[in-house]
Length: 297
Image (cartoon, rainbow, N blue to C red):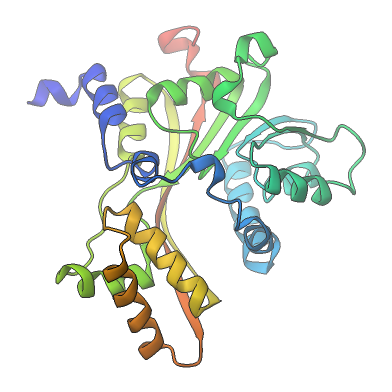
């Protein structure tokens, strides 16, 4: 068994075939990750640019700069740019940004958010990164920093390699380090299953272990981050059903009635304070150190 711990192929296959990864659970429940934000684009944009969202972006960028990343005149590939929560501050610090975002409602908001910059400072690529031919596009080792923050484009080691191929100095990837914590799920789960909700470890462990096995130099960080939002009881019901479906529970009339009854009794004002977040992993990979160990990617 110890030999398996150091076997790259076993870890690559385990990640690819793990049914509990975030993307696999979404697809199994009938949710297309690319369209998951269609009806949430506006609120997501507000959260990205409110005080808390700006502080989060600044905190992460300061951490990157502390590790030697420079944004002034740097070329940055922001994969899964959403409405520009990072693309905008990257450009504000002097970077030239290529923002990849396939979700059209988010692209429209991104276009509005970059309107203050000179033309070309932030270039939008409204395509799924998965469908882009990196070599044909001229993106091989073309960016000082390839940046992927909480984007479902990272699904297995092959998807990591595609991102790494784009960078010549640094690559940043963040993803869940445990299953998402959601107050409604924690409250409602025992009503449906008679058991408390338990969080699971997530695929960040695969990423770190494979980076280690393949000889990469990197810094990593795991934090627990939570946020609170207030939503209507109707929105809370829909959100709860979506979350329960992702975790494999049936979206049937019985479950919906149970959840609706709980929300009505517990939140008579019609407003529901929802806490969500969890443990998140961040890793900065130093590609300039890689050629000494394994050669060209």
